[in-house]
Length: 503
Image 1 (cartoon, helix red, strand yellow):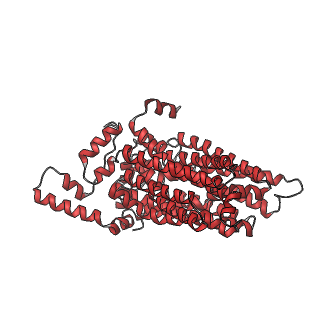
Image 2: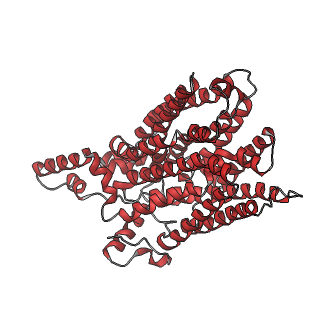
Image 3: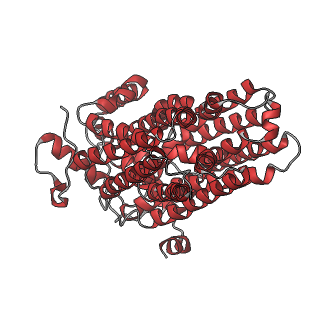
């Protein structure tokens, strides 16, 4: 009902958010493609036969460390050139990497393509939610910032079934075709984003371009009543002030420009006194999001189902495809109710649910109940994997991605969000690399590890996280300022604990 209403009216900011979100399909497709591709007969024939668990993990995870490194600098790129340009540059680099993979004649060249892909992925992925959060009215921000996550899940599903369709080709095109499509789609999205995505009005305001910001708000179709007040730094306020002599204003402009030119100053601004506690929470939440074990399910679903007892590759592939379809469908519900469910409750109760499911699976394996006489434990494990995917997609996948860009001010939002994504990539790398090794060493150890991380995250967020649902970005920032200064907190009426200052 809500989606139909928005698409029927189709205000420009919704169309811009949709175009921005569309770039997320690239990450999703790569996630869905890499597992089946590395299991294809022609892929193994092209690169010297089967790989052991360690090599398999390295091939899959080789995209992640480059993504973590580039993501650390993506915030500065987005602050310097603008959100939309930062996205288009990252998508272009990603497309080049996919093209290298498609043309690979050796395993080293294929991994090199994944490294290039990772560099681009780190540059654009974190900036998507920053851009959408900045252009969206408060009433729809939760729903719209969930858009990239929905598109990512559709990409995972598309990747699985693309490989299913190409696997019947009797040549190396069976595994090259998905990457050819991925490279072509990347270039199409790069061009569309560069030419059709308007700049963020908040970014323009932050750079003192207030008239252009007003024009951008008008172009996006956001009414004056919905526009949130943008808090400017003192230098920018002085630059735009109507009073004062021209020499003073010129001096301030030069000072502000020099500050913007300082890369290290911009990067380390996220550790300043007023925002460092928020930065710490962002890094923690984004890291633990992956340590819940979701990428264990996404990357290695066929392996998990085979371990549970679905011996044939066809059966495990079918089960994996169904899991991707389930994730996509439930993410739609997460999108619809993102602005009705609280961020805090979603993260806490979702974490408890994820932990319980992981402990259940681990307990069944530890008690040798999975492959017993009747095999009932096997089906419990298979159903539990689906339940885990459902809980994650409706809670953590949505709420954490929304919450992270909400709690930082404009000057550090891009840098802090992309730093969070950098920590997310590092944790992602650890999970992708070690999961096949852990599963080979122990049938239950990985599940207990992921379950413990989920419960720990729920406990930490119960203490340090506060509710931001229904509040404008400026109201959220004002609440943090009041807390740091010791004044009465506007969020006290919500009866939610706010992050304690580490100063």
